[in-house]
Structures are given as structure tokens and as C-alpha cells.
Image (cartoon, rainbow, N blue to C red):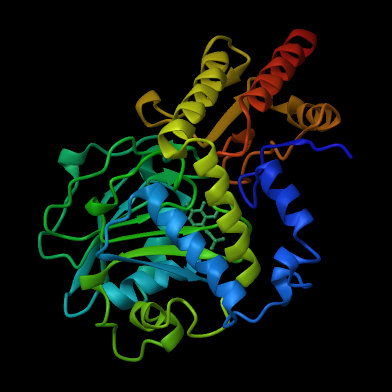
Amino acid sequence: MTRVYNFSAGPAVLPEEVIIQARDEMLDWHGTGMSVMEMTHRGKQFMAIAEQAEADFRELLAIPENYKVLFLQGGATSQFAMVPMNLLQNKKQADYICTGHWSKKAVVEGRRFGEINLAASSEDTGFQHVPPHQDWKLDPEAAYVHYTPNETIAGVEFHWIPDSGKVPLVADMSSTLLSRPLDVSRFGVIYAGAQKNIGCAGLTVVIVRNDLIGRPLVGTPAMFDYQIHADHNSMYNTPPTYAWYVAGLVFSWLKRKGGLAAIAKVNQAKADTLYSFIDSNDFYYNPVERAFRSRMNVPFILSEQQLDEIFLEEAKKAGLTNLKGHRSVGGMRASIYNAMSQEGVETLVEFMKEFERTRA
Ligand code: PMP
């Protein structure tokens, strides 16, 4: 068996220890004679798995008591709708900060439900930076402020939490949650699809402050109502049981690794290794303004575009996969989430050096 270094943006590499544990528990979970896939979600075995996963997740992020954690389906894309359906309430409009592909999608979806004020956007300059906070046109009467702390495609990250005053702050953390410590108390809602740093696809995690739920827009379906999911401990209907279990394995792996402060150091070292190599030569180029570079998704462009396909082919032969950049940006992108090792990043850098030496 050979495992590759998988730089996919998502579904992404998982810690090998987690996959091995899932394999070992596959046919017979803890002497039950069945796989987690085959268990009723209402039974005491799955309840124990679910509760432990939530407890570990709360511990990792130090989530305050006055927040609910929901284990849902539908991806981060469903949250683009669930957020306005639950948070617009009696307000006229919400503020959105648009810094890339995903925040733009959130804006478009939000407009189905209410007036969306584009308080700031970096679209006119190709989504390569975050507009300065002092230029944001925030409305103190907005229902909430929505932003995307890490734009997975262009690789643009906020390295601070914006101040939204009394207005609840909502964040799509799909590609950054669990990559470093976070002050959850600064947020009204945090959501993330699981298929990057949390686990496998099929699960969407939502952290929501208690006082923000219970007043959905008229006509909101039960499956889109945070209150209903909260009242039923995310078991209003059949939850994504296996993905919830895998997330639990990832949380316990993270705890063994020393938690979020420890993983943040590893992540910073990986990003530093890759960016400092990219910046040290003229063959590779990262277009994002330095202050906003993502620690999770690192796009890079080859100075000779006609070499893109050869680069990808040779990388694959060397066991380095899924480096193709998103079609809207082109070039390459290395996603280096929690489960990518420093060794994986160093192997990539060595490959890039060698490619440059032989092709440039
Ligand atoms: N937001 C961000 C920041 C993402 O990276 C993604 C997926 N790559 C999405 C939203 C969409 O997530 P999903 O496919 O889970 O709906």
C-alpha cells in the first residue's frame, strides 16, 4: 500500500491514524459486532460516540456554555441559506464582506431572503486582499455581518477577527476551523463543512449562540431551523452518523497532538516553508498580498504556463497529488490542512526545486 501526499482542497487528506482506527473498528465497533454505519442513531452506542465527539470539539475550541453545537448535513452551502433564514428575524438587511468565490456565493444566496449590503468587496482587484476594515460600510442596524475568514480558492485569509460591534458576527470557517485557537465568544455563528479539517464529507458543523435561535423567517422548513436541530440534539432526523464518528476520531487525534495551539505551530511552520520557497525564486509566484496569505491553501503560478500540465503529471508520479489550482484561478494550489505533515510540504518543495532546475 502506498499513500500519496494529497494536497486536495477538500475532501482532503485525513490523519493516517484516524483512517487506521476507522479501519480497525470497521467490522466490529467495540465488541458490538457491527460497524458504526450499521448502528441506530438512537441507540446508546451511537449516542456515546456523538456525545464524546461534541465534548472533545467543545474542549478543543473552548466553546462557551451559551453556544449550541449542531451536527448537520447539507454542506456549508446550505448554511448560506440557513444563516439568513434564522438570523434576519425582524431586521431589514445583513452586511456581507466579499473576499472571494465562497463569500460571493453566500451573498447571492442571502439575496433570496433579504436585502444584502455588500459592506466591502475585493472583487475589483481579483480577490487578492482583504479591504481595510476602516473602509467597510457596516450598518449598526444590520441583522448580522457575514464573512469568510479563509477563502479556499484564492488563498486569502483574515489573520484577525473583525470588530462588528453589537451586530452578531457570522463566519464561514469551512477551510480554517480547528487550524488554530479561536475566541468563539466573538461570534454569533460559525459554520464549516467537515471535509477539510474536521473529517469526511457529509457533515456540517454549526456553532450558534443560544440567543440567536428560535425566530426563523416565516415558512422556514424544519430542516433549516437551528432551534429544531438544537432541541433534538441534532437528531431531529437521521444525522450523518458515520461522518460524525469520523469527526470524533479526528477530534481525539487533535487532542493527542496537543490541541489547537500545538497544531497552529505546525501549520505556521508548513506555510512558512512553502511561502518562503515560493518567494525565493522567480519561477513560482503567489499573487496574494502577504498580510492576507492563507496558512491552509497556498496557490502558486508557474512563470511558464505551458508547463502546468507537465508539472502536474510529474508531481503525480512523485506521489504529490491534487495540486491543480481551481479553474477560476489556474496554476497550482497546495492545500496544507492539519493532516498534511511538514514532511509532505518539504517533499513538495524539493520536487518544485528539482522541477525548476530541470525545466526553467
Ligand atoms: N465555503 C468555503 C470556504 C469552502 O471552501 C467550501 C467548499 N470548498 C464551501 C463553502 C462549500 O462547502 P460545501 O461543499 O460543504 O457546501
